[in-house]
Length: 304
Picture (cartoon, one colour):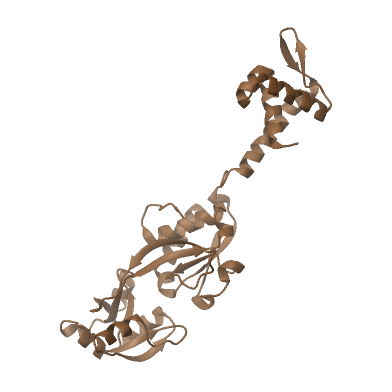
């Protein structure tokens, strides 16, 4: 029996009238009458019988009335996207791939937000070890967060914000004794940040256009280790503008604008389309976006 036939049965049993059932269903009385005949054959019961000028339900119809209504409500909940979703009852673990710099800046806010709305949800953060691989496609990762690249063609993305790169060094670094121009910036010894050990990047290309070259004295795999090393040496590192200001101050570090024409970084999130309409996954993506965009309030709803 198809769902439309069940809806017709529900209307007939609730209205006890072919005419009123037809109005409720948006069809003609003749069509509703033919549907009643079909239902009688399917159920093996007359369902509605003549009593004077009207119709009355049979005992079998009375038995079916609430059962049919309940079945339809259940079907509507299944077919309506996100219907009945309540984060408070969600029991799930979400996996996020992100750099340690983003992780440190948002994990606390995200955790507080999630535990307030969904106390049974856990989050696992993974490093970018599987970047460029099939992590999203294979389901190893729920969301990739950061500067997106090397994605499979079907992957869905959402742009979150732009961030500018800035330099960072200990507060007493000689670099702060004067105006930091491109030449003084290039003359300082630098910390490279690459989990693959790469030494050169966009900054080196921008310096080369000015006929300058910097020395990458050491390469470390994470932003956290770079900040710790910059705190204890005269090496210069990179970080995101207006990110972790309390941590930077507590470590005795200081940021400065990079005196080069550099494009800002586009930060976004990526996920596999099989999760696009899943209400729990969608709720988590919005929570993650809120932690990046407005940690102290607001809920930037997803549009992608």
